[in-house]
Image 1 (spheres, rainbow, N blue to C red):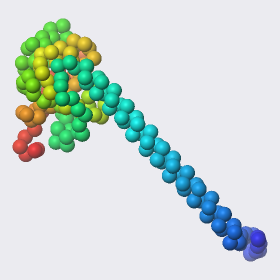
Image 2 (cartoon, rainbow, N blue to C red; image 1 turned 90 degrees about the vertical axis):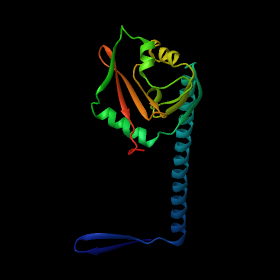
Image 3 (cartoon, rainbow, N blue to C red; image 1 turned 45 degrees about the vertical axis):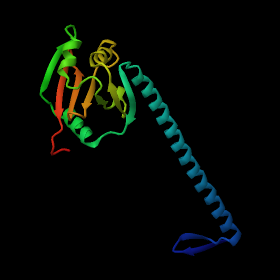
Image 4 (cartoon, helix red, strand yellow; image 1 turned 90 degrees about the horizontal axis):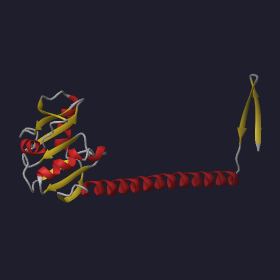
Length: 187
């Protein structure tokens, strides 16, 4: 039923709904809400599946480091993440530079302070948001893989035993290594 009222040259429409119409309207609204919730659930499921696929591919990539064992994806560690972000934003002093042509893996592996069989963390592994925790069996072999394959040009290494972060970045003609130390205050 539609009622029209005239008031100062304006027509105001007032719609009066019957009970049946209200029930139908409510039912339609419930169906729409259910559809929205289903869409949200489906999107969430797809995101979870994508995350699992990405993690599986990441672990496959990490397993190519044949000197590594006990490989797992871990959640970012806040104190190290904060220090890494600080290192990326601020121009930290360069600890060591290595020319591309003069890359001496043996010398490099001696300058990075973790030992064979130590656990290290590779944050943002393979340019993702994921962190990889890995036990390195042979440090020199690890660096050969990381550099000589050309697969990893820039990466960071966290040595949790020593509370040290190394960021190894590619510059125009050399590798630049910067070091960040986690202090007792930051722990």
